[in-house]
Length: 252
Image 1 (cartoon, helix red, strand yellow):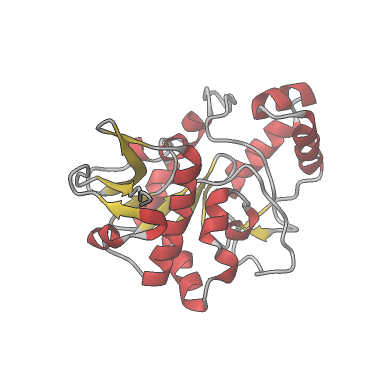
Image 2 (tube, rainbow, N blue to C red):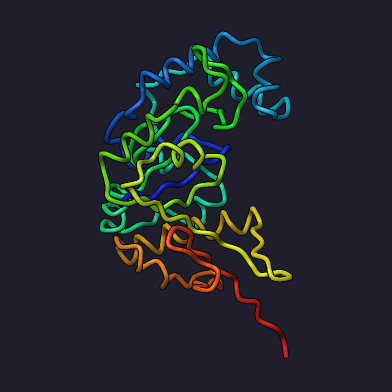
């Protein structure tokens, strides 16, 4: 089993916590992307990143002296988004850390596919960024089937907790022999399941924590997830898409 999650835009260095255990699998590809970004003028980088002047300046500074083999932070501790706050990996027990070490993988536009304790540097590069690379029109073309090929060799099924932007880098390339279950977190409105970005991020992070706490390894165990007011909805679910609806509680 491999659990796929998205990264977060906001990153930090943590040189005093857990030490990195390994370098990313696709370090050569990350080096190529770094070189390409370093060759771009600031105006083009700001447009690529779709950010304000302050964020652009911070990331241009990071690029200037980026060494992908030094001053590294374990990937699981480097991201600061909502999903990671709800996951709270910094307070995992030893058993929970071992669980995510084995099962969790982070998709990344810059690094491709990260293990939790791969050492990374803060970067800014979303998977959907329109960055032509080596004859490919974008990062989806650049990564191609590489990420899916690694997963295919590692596991018997994939749990997709990533956003569509990131799962798109893997799903089309998985063989039919490798099942992927996607979890959907939403609410029912006028007969439709509606997903809301922030709530989805919260639920995905909470589910990773719940998976680690309960040492989940089989698809059927997922239906027991009951955090943040969500309950599994068999009526809305299929074999490949598990839908969890947030139960609305009224006031008397």
